[in-house]
Image 1 (cartoon, rainbow, N blue to C red):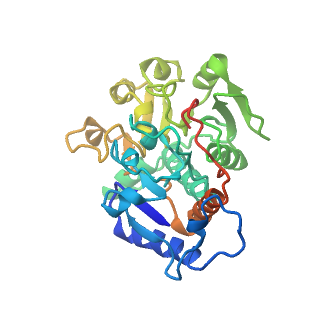
Image 2: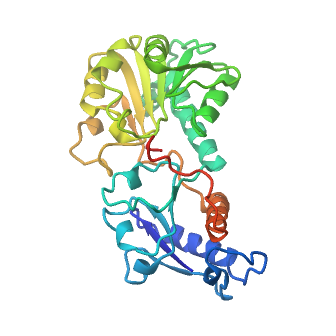
Image 3: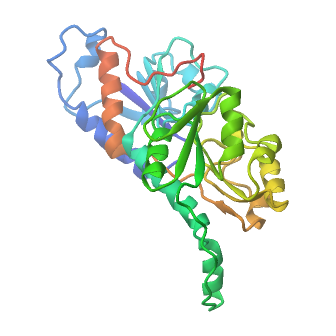
Length: 331
């Protein structure tokens, strides 16, 4: 079995850890599955499967592709692929490839560790804003010891856009620390202590009611450019915007204009239309925008590898793995 790996970040430490975990998991003959769809894949040697760069000559013969941000055409060039696994919960980085093979199943990671990390990030940046962290740090730099009026946060309405595996954890944890949480999703959800909404009317209600707006939506044709001048104009004045979804869901110049006009108090952004964020980008010069380099929830091989192993085993058994991409929805 050949596992082809591609991660556009080029982090060799992470690559080495994935290789160690997967080779260890499969480094033995598996005698428990005598009726595999591909018996040859069951006869693994003691060294485990070959773990190669997907964009190498050996990668062209890969059975499994484990990827983040593969260049267009790379997956189509691997003619033996039986499964494509996203190295994150999002699959838009795979879906944008016009040559994505139609017949190869694609699955995404739904790792509780990612939900835990992203929920911590959202809570951290939201509380930092509400408790005047930037202003107090500026005062401290000037040795100014002065109190500021404290914002009342008990039952403060906040909206979470996207109530999937990550969004629902964020919503539940915000509710647990005293916020009045509204949630919006493409289809109606039901979550304890969360006022769930869907559809255009629900979208308008969340925009017009919440004082903080948190985007955790998947990127699809319907969510691209969703947060724009029209959306910001409907938010209560001095609202705060947090984006942990995808950069292309935000019209960046509209956000900048909303902040500079005073319509929004500021924003915390972990994702951008172009990454790394260009040095000349206007966001760098706006102190009310907190910039994070796509680190709110990084994939943890230690926990995510369990799902990758389970997905590979399912394919070896002739089954479909969990968390499959629905190509009609785009996620």
